[in-house]
Image (cartoon, rainbow, N blue to C red; front, side, top):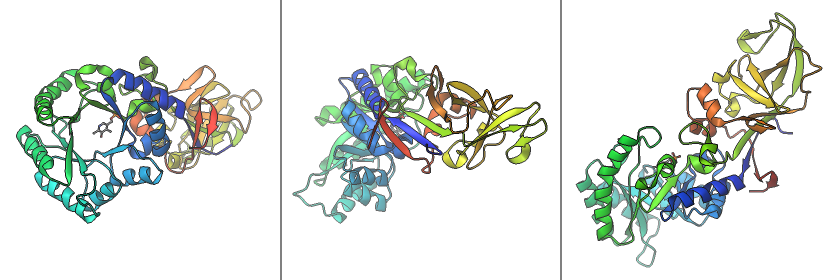
Length: 382
Ligand SMILES: *Cc1c(COP(=O)(O)O)cnc(C)c1O
């Protein structure tokens, strides 16, 4: 028994990817494993995603690309985020594909390629060009600038133009704005592809991939859904997605709170009647957010019990019922996200309590929590 552990079902990641690859087909599936695979472990999930039918991986940062390479992953790998000169060299050493939307950055990519030892006998650096069709973050808003940047990439001997991309701001909640973005993006990308054979056009995130084919183009970039989390914030099983991650702790202590006695900092739980209270050695230091104070549940022995009192850094307290005798015993396993018997706690439900999204709940599980991997219950070393 570990004080806190996240268990990740790699078979679920694999099946989620197979489902998304089928939904996207004939478009290719790019699996997004940034932020340590949304808290699930990047390298293990990357391998599962590739086994499930992804043909490209994407991350946000150069260091994330370098760690996937260090873990022995040899697939195509795209760094989607902005890169400083220093980071660009790290990305290129990791043989990543990179994104640009500025002509001055095209020159920087070429300079970084030279700095890391690129010569005419090497493969050119694969570059994607990004149009900002409405997200308002990275990319250029001007199709003619994006085209000029693309032509500059295509003309450079050290570079190869491989992709034309955009990012959708509202695929999960405003299909009308999504269609407006696609209406700006598609003519630009299709015209560029007509001039550059084999150019991979891509726009869709998980929500857009599931919504339908109009956003699929040549490749989709799925993150949240490969982990079995619902991009629409409800229930992943509505889409036949399987949550891959569960989060566990155990009852390290169980004792009775008599009326007037309290549990936790600030005495935010004071027993009105005799209450058996369990202490679970997991807290906000592990990513169990303090907003779950008097506002959360855990599963023990297949039943739901409320979190009572303040979530602290290393412990939470849970009310088990009026007596110690009919309640779960010290040592019992507790599930904070996941299933026990017929009960389940979805990351989406935890997110709703915290007024956030499943993405933040999964990414928030801290590095202090060991990740254990399994395939449908069978422990594996990842
Ligand atoms: C994170 C990210 C994705 C994946 O989004 P999901 O909603 O997790 O599927 C796709 N594209 C870009 C540019 C991203 O940053």
